[in-house]
Amino acid sequence: MIDPPIPLRFDGIARYAREHGWHMTLANRLVRLPSGWNGDGALVTLRGDEPTTQVVKGLVAQGIPVVDLTCYMPEVAVARVIPDYRSAGRIAAEHFAEIGLRRVAWFSTIWTHVHGLFFQGLRERWPDATRIVLADSVPDENLDDINLFTDVIGSRLAALPKPVGILTYNDEEASRILSLCLETGLKVPDDVAILGIGNDTFLCENQPVPLSSVIDDLDRNGYEAAALLDRLMDGIPRKGGCEIGEPVLVPCRGLAARRSTDALAVDSPVLRQVLRHMREHIAHTPSAVQLAETAGVSRATLDRLFADVLGRSMHDELLRLRLAKARDMLANEPASVGQIAAACGFCNAGHFVSVFRKAHGTTPAKWRQNAAAATTSIPRHEAR
Image 1 (spheres, rainbow, N blue to C red):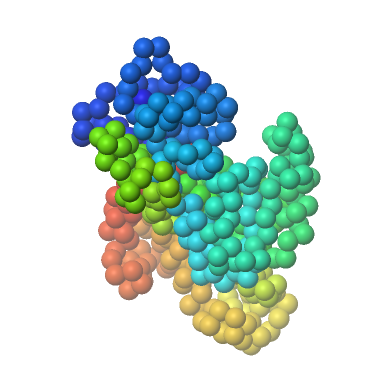
Image 2: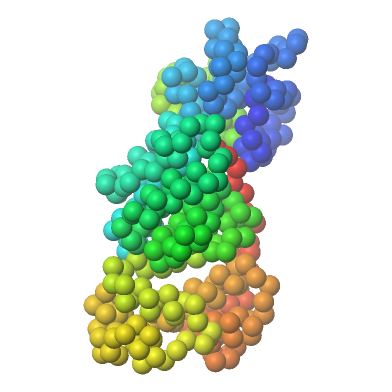
C-alpha cells in the first residue's frame, strides 16, 4: 500500500514496482486502512496528520513493515529513506561562497524538523546565517496574507546587510522572495542572490530573473524506499541489523545555476553599480571610460577596483558576463547562434563561436545539445 508520496517519488516507486511485479493500492490521505486490505507493507509520507500517524502506528503494532519517505516526524519509529536535506544546505552554502558572499540567510514560511535539517547544512559553512521564518511573526491563519508578507519579510530583507544570499525551502518560496525584492527595489542578484531547492524548471525559468536551485533526487528517493520496503517485507533487515534507526539518505544531484545568483558579491557600491550596468547593457556595453563616468570615478580607479576586488580586468569580466548570458540563452531560448551573438554583444556569429569554443571546449550548438539532454534527465520539483 502507498500513502501518496507525491508525483516524482511515484516515478521511482512505479519503476521499482514494475521491475519486481508489485501489486499496489493507493490511499489518498491515509486516515484508515482500505476495507479488506491485507497487504505486506506500506510506503508513507508522514507530515503530522494525526489520523495518518495513528494508522501507521497501528501497522507497526501489527508487524507490518512501513517506510517513511520524509522526516517531518522523526519521533514515529519507522524505517526511512529521505533526501539528504543537510547536503542541500551544504551545496547552497558552497555556491554562495563561490560567488563571494559574506552574508547569507534562510527563508521559509513555516518551520519543521525538515526545515531545520536544511538550515543545519547551511550553517555548517555559515554559522552566523540569519533565519527568517514567516510563521515566527505571523499567525498560521494569515500566512498567505500578501500584505503581511510584504510588511514583515520586506522589513527583514531591507535590514539585512547587502549583498546577501538567501536560501529558501523550495522554489515557490524563492519566487516569493524574488517578487518581494523586485517590488521593493532590491536588485537580484546584486543586492540579494536567491537560491531555491527542488529545481522546478517550469517555475525557475519563468521568472523575471530565472532562479538558481539545488537539484534534489526524489525519483531515486521513491525507488530506494521501495527497495528497502521490499527487503523488510521479505524479512531481510536493513543495513545495520534492524529496520529502525538512522534513515537512508539520498544525495542531491547538484545545483542548477541561473541568473538569480549570477553575480559576484562585492562590497564596493561603485563596482556593484558598474557590474549591474554591464549586465543590463550587455548587447551594447558602454566603453570603460563611459562606465567610469557613470559611476563617478576615474578610469584608473575603476581599473584598480576590478583588479583588487575581482582579480581580473574589466574586459575579462565583461567576457565572463557575455558568456554566462549566452549559456543561459542556449539552454532556455530557441534563438539562433547569430541572434545569441548579437544579444550578448559579440560582433558576429563567427567571433562568438570562436570565443565560446575557446572558453568551453565545444561549439555553442553542441553545448546546447548537451544542455538539452541533461535537462530532460532532471526531474521537476514538488513539495517535499
